Amino acid sequence: MGSLRRIIGLLKPYRGMVILAFLFQSIVITSRLIQPLITRLVVNEVIIAGQQALLLRLLLSLLGLVLVRASSGFLRVQLMERASQSVAYDLRTGLFRHLQNLSASFYDQNRVGEIMSRMTGDLEGVRDYLAEGIVTFFEQTLTFFGALIFMFTLSWQVALTILTTLPLIAWVAFRFRKRIGPVFREVREQSAQLNTRVQEDLAGIHVVKAFVREDHEQQRLELENRKLLALHLNITDIWSDYVPVMQGLSEVCTPLVLAVGAALIAAGRMDIGTLVGVTGYIWMLTQPMRMLSQIINGMTRASTSAEKVFYYLDLGSSIKDVQDPQTPEKREGHVVFDRVSFRYDEQLVLDDISFEALPGQTVAIMGATGAGKTTLVRLLSRIYEASAGRVLVDGVDVKLQAMRALRKDIGYVPQETFLFSESLFENIRFGRPEAPLEQVVQAARAAQAEPFIEQMPLKYETVVGERGIGLSGGQKQRTAIARALLIDPSILVLDDATSAVDMQTEYLIQQHLERAMQGRTTFVIAHRISSVKNADQILVLNQGRIAERGTHQQLLALRGEYWQMWQDQLTSIAGEGEVG
Ligand SMILES: Nc1ncnc2c1ncn2[C@@H]1O[C@H](COP(=O)(O)OP(=O)(O)O)[C@@H](O)[C@H]1O
Ligand SMILES: [Mg+2]
Image (tube, rainbow, N blue to C red; front, side, top):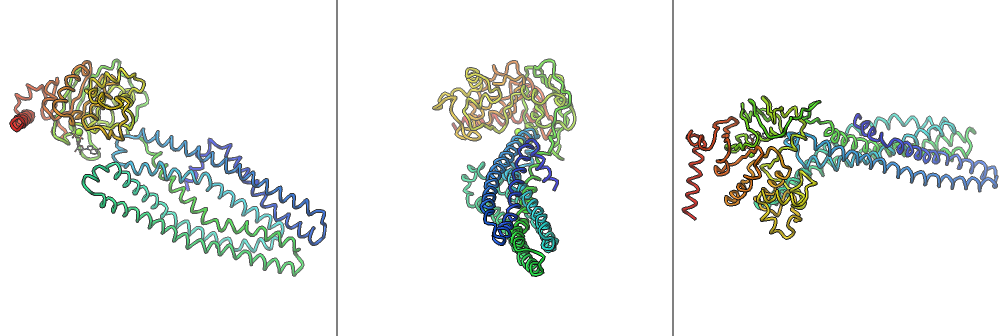
């Protein structure tokens, strides 16, 4: 129920519209309530008392009521739709902004398909309720009590008779809500589950096809789909259990009213016009009863959807800026790791890492997969935060720096390239959307992306598919390097950024990067010795610890892990040479 109150609270900015809408709805209801009184007059005054002159006036007022009702109804729908669509718009925008601000760990734990489900299905559920559910609730409540009051004034005996059925109806309604609530929750969970499946299958469609797993994926999807169907059918079962009971209870009212009315007329305590009038109120009393299951349905559905939406909205980001962020005096790319440790949940991934990178230096990080290389560079831009120790950039702990300013100064080429389905031009200037073409070309040249872009039919205007489909792995990586260079950062992070390019191209990229790296502190994560041997210092990570450090020559002299890699790579190159 708390979430329902919160949904209604969302309407606050549109208070005016909502009040007007309710006003118009009240007019509709009042005009309905007046109608039986006119019918009563027609029977008593025109038909029985024979005042024919009154008839035209009465009929005209009936017609007037119809007109008032129609136009008020129209305005009500317009206003409520507008208000609810605006709330949906606000909610979508707000939710998206909120999602963008959540930390990386949120995305480690939540799946895109599920989030999409909240952004679409659940949001629409909330909106639906705002547009129709609330009004229906208001309408039916007002109609019911209005009709009851009018009935009381016409004949208290009849009204009391109807009231006797109410406790029973309330009890049935209460049971209904209790049974249907949990199932709605399951439906929302299950449709999120289904969405996630579909989203993952489509995102990974190339893998599915390559491994000929279409049938298997189809079966998995059908399994989820069947579960959803079963839940919906379960709702139908519960619903169809209660609808006839509610309707039956409401339909008992008609014979009850007629019986009591007939007895009253026989006793001379009621006139015929009043009985006709009273019967006019019967449907106004019974309809709300009949609608009760629907109203409860709508409420429950909306509140379960709202719970999901609000759950996301209420999540805080685990990484936030401090109250008064500090700005380094000069951004030049001076990086210090001071006894840094990091753990994802339980697992210790970085253990007591200390090193210093002077402005302009190149630091290479090597180590087996899973050694913690990616994690280390993520700590630089506060994608994750150190569990212990400090990461200083230009003399200030990154935790004390404003995230946005810090990140704007770090050119990050992630291990897995992601490009947007836009032109190469827009992709490269993603971090500096105002950059002119010549700078984009310059960055592309430095990243050795120019040759392949020049060969594209539309050159820089070539639109790449979602996640860069249509480009080779190496082309995507070079585009990503250009994107990072364009923001002219004082720190450049290349996380395995040339893993997908051939050695020849890697050599060319390096030649170009040499110049691009001047004046920047560069972190190079790589596996090929050839990519790292010119670095000012090389860190060899082993299970989260720095196992060896030094220059290429120093590390070779150590005859340790680095030397071993060097040997292995020399042999494999020599081997290739023999075969080739
Ligand atoms: N988001 C994450 N949540 C939990 N564990 C993670 C996450 N990312 C990486 N890890 C774990 O941390 C360790 C280091 O990962 P990573 O820094 O990606 O290594 P590398 O880049 O050297 O291959 C691995 O054991 C990996 O399983
Ligand atoms: Mg990695």
